[in-house]
Length: 254
Image (cartoon, rainbow, N blue to C red; front, side, top):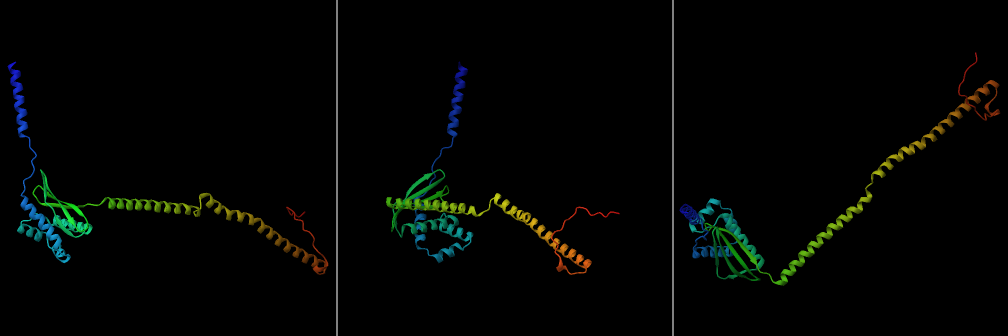
């Protein structure tokens, strides 16, 4: 009995030790003021930079860009910084000129930080989300514009019309292609077209033979007429050859 109790206590201690060694998922630590300064700098820079300055910045080497970020204490990468500016400008193009934004809301996790704020633009409002990795380097900026019910229905209707128009265009194209099939000769038509010249040649052959035979008879009549006229000592006008009988074999009796 004592051995069983000792074994159970040992198992309980092992379970508790494994539970204590298990890793607990805790959100990362961050400085709200530092992160807020990065976001304010990004918004101000995106609003004030012109195309020439942006092109000049993009033409810098990656080393120069990283050096400037390090000197200013901004946790940006060249890729994430350029992508964030493009996202912000795309939001301005969709929502209108930037007016202002509300308070920043921080949501920390084990693998990163998400900061969101409600932004007011000239034409509509939007929710902007800034995402940072576990080292608090900026990863992306997403501008989610808010559309009214009428605008959503309008977009849905346009998408429906576009889809239906595409389907009808494809169906019309298919029907045109099918209608052109009648101009393509089938296998039986090809065989008939090939057999027609052969049949015509076969029908023309007897006519040619008849013409040739008739020409031979005329020549034979002329020769016989000349021979008789020479034998009688007269001309071919005094008689007429009415018929010629052909014999299968011509043997001379000795």
